[in-house]
Amino acid sequence: MIFPEFLQQGDLITIVSPSGAIDGEVIEQAAAAIRRLGYSVKIAEHAKGKHHRFSATDEERLADLQSALDDPHTRVILCGRGGYGLTRIVDRLDFSKFIENPKFVVGFSDITALHAALLTKAKCCSVHGQMAKAFVGYDATLDKKDAENPEVAESVEELLNILTGVRRRQTYFSYNQRSRVARDKVKGRLFGGNLSLIYALRGTDLDITKQSGILYIEDIGERMYSIDRMMQNLRMSGVFGRIKGLIVGKFTDTDIDSSFGSIEDLIFNVTKGYDFPILFDIPFGHVDRNLPIINGSVATIAANALTFKTKK
Image (cartoon, rainbow, N blue to C red; front, side, top):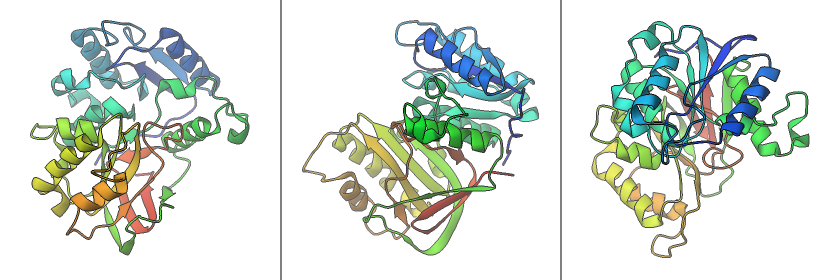
């Protein structure tokens, strides 16, 4: 598995918007904040654009993303936002130049499709984490507890710690009493992201559910029956017979449906008969405290803790 080089002062971060449209002023403010941190910033040609719900046409977004992947000077590709759009172009990406000069790709939500492509096609680690908007107003000189939004500030700080190689490993704990903790330590590569995108890519060349590592999932705005349907699909196709563990982030803006109970009830029901550890409420997803996860990294689950390597 390829692990990109860490970010250093003066390195180039390229901001792209391969999915939905984002306010151009947000992109400019994020770029200014990143420059204050000591990095160079390039804004992709159509990153601030708008074409219906997208940042640009499919061809323009594809060209922007391909250019960033190919650019030998770019050290990090930071996505502007998620939304929708990557599944329209992701299968047309060419990773041949990227593999020769890999860099970290950062994003979540719809960017799950890009993480999947990097894992299956390029065999490269990437970062599931906060995007451009989170950098707006970020001040590294402030203690995060004094920031306007301490949880977003913590998420950006931890993202930078990973991108710059500050830590050898990262550990997140589950304090949810319903977590099925690991009786014995389990080990595997992390793969996953947004459940709807994982489901949408099933049966394609970018299907990550063929992996046998540790699956992590989150989602937003899905009805409980829809979450159940997607999870039942994973069950029926044998995914739960392959994985070593399940990491559940935040499922935000879901409906309350007594047919399924809580998200914990739903997941325990669909995984009935399997004994792999399940950790709930790990801090990632469509929430302010969206801490980074290295997709493709070797990880362990021990008791109620998820630990993954943040270095080669």
